[in-house]
Length: 433
Length: 125
Ligand code: SF4
Image (cartoon, rainbow over all chains, first blue to last red; front, side, top):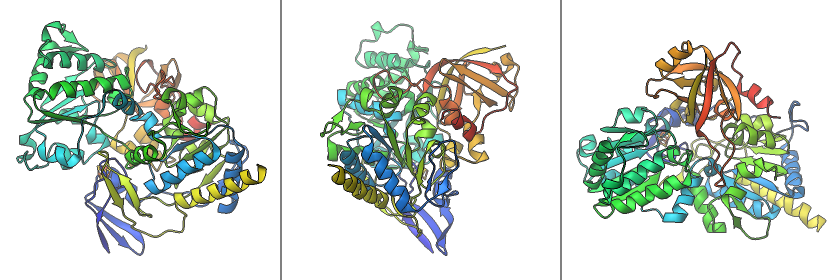
């Protein structure tokens, strides 16, 4: 059986044109996906059953779902400052339950954006975000800028479907309708496909953005001969290209959010767009990683008013990223339990933060054995959302789409596990109050 | 011989393909290496596949070397994952985001073996 119009549950492109062949309840072929998406849908070795251990250096023993869920609830209910992290690799329906659980236990809920596009949100708080949808960009953009992102490696079909090689209604000659400019500290595979590559010195994007803003505003005389390793003439050329756009789009990635300046880089990039909008129509958008990281931002915002790093310990939502983001909490040794679901803190946090996580009970809800499992006391395997479970996810541009189920499995969903933990937490808290 | 460098981490297709396969050799191959250009490798006297030790103020890690000519002189890259995390800066400077890019590093040739994911994590508990 071939299932058509399948959505890919890997990256924020959320490609929705996959054809997956299923035989005897097994995926046997994945068409139209990139190598990463196909690899995810084909699947990998799973954690077979719930597991627990008292000593993180000890061996796991298999336990029942009931035992693992009850023990998780007990840990969370008695914890004073639990961190509930991950979420981006799951569906909106489970995220809503996650926020409810956080409220029940007076914990802090944070998602993978805090080590990804969290700073972008802070930039947006400062300056707003003149943005649009991938469909608009695909059909209209004639100048495409990739700044500190490398879609060839991280979002492999982005350039083909939405940004560079596709034919659009207005950009109807595909690649030939567009000028492509890449700003990066190294000549990436994306840079190799560009018309113009601008090599920026590591950590100096803010200055390059400022210089471009000055040139676009007609104040080029204040710009020195080189900025961030880029000659002024080159900046002037790129500024002209951007100004000449009928519709310009800037896609940006971790090159801006994780390097010096962090959220201030985004603030400045948005200011450049504002400046450019005096000349043409320009938009900017972050290249989101996990397929539903944008979904978490949306669900969390409509439930709590904030997009991540929300502390519920006061009895109302409190948000202050440098204080309530996972890595800050860990480095200050503030948390006394960690609940990691649909995101792998163990693989993506700095070693020092993970070492702090090593000191507290860690509960992991995930289909796969990963570095978080190595640090865990309790492991609860669940369905692979978007392959074994249908539900809602948000593409990187904030468009919500329905993920499909391709095969049936016996594992519970994240949502079912969360429901049971919430019920048990209520029971324990009810009994003790 | 050592090389003073600036460290960055980032995604790759192969690291992505093994994101749910992190106990495998394929994940190690996809995320446990350090890239630099051939001029820098020449200065260090190392060849692709030789191990190098990358040290920052925040830790050190031994991984095999790969060549990528797209890297300017003095820029080294380790894909995002536990090997990169051994040397990144946990300080978020008040915005939640640790320093994953632009960290001063020193690279040396090394005869030590590169740690597996499990060995790296075992150091942290
Ligand atoms: S580009 Fe992203 S969403 Fe599209 S197939 Fe590849 S991994 Fe999946």
